[in-house]
Length: 245
Image (cartoon, rainbow, N blue to C red):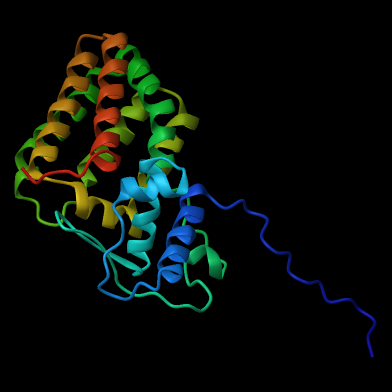
């Protein structure tokens, strides 16, 4: 008999993200209170107070629970239990999966990177690059009002092209990665809850303002316009419940 030692796979040492922990806490609350499918959950602000965390963090956790089929969010009505088991958690991270950084963490990363790349692009972008960005915004203005299940392919193209115009390949790759992450199940649920015709019109205006700053080579304005776009977007996704207007 061979004396070789068979290596045992090492357990993951990945630290649990805040939204993962809050999602498990909400699931625990559902079990503790004996809630059944169809029962209504407390409002996000009440859950934030109960767990001693921020409301945006609770919203991110609720998106994870919705993507996993544990809860159902009914716009303008509330959040309801959809399916819960008293057995082991079936959330992705509990069975060895990694759903990746949540949308809130991604927004925070973008706010650190994209305003500075916009400022650099105002100085370094070529006339052809600025013209291409302007064409993307013009196309957004034309097609966004008619989109059904909204997907921001044009936004992806705009922000990654703008990042490349900032002439820092490492940061441009980070922006590309952050936009690729927006293809997750959590993002699909979040967009379904938040994106409205009014929001679509607003983001076209925000991106056009950035292009205008590039055209005048105004780095300070480009930085400020990108910051404003990201702050408004974060408020839409993680602020008060949006109205479809």
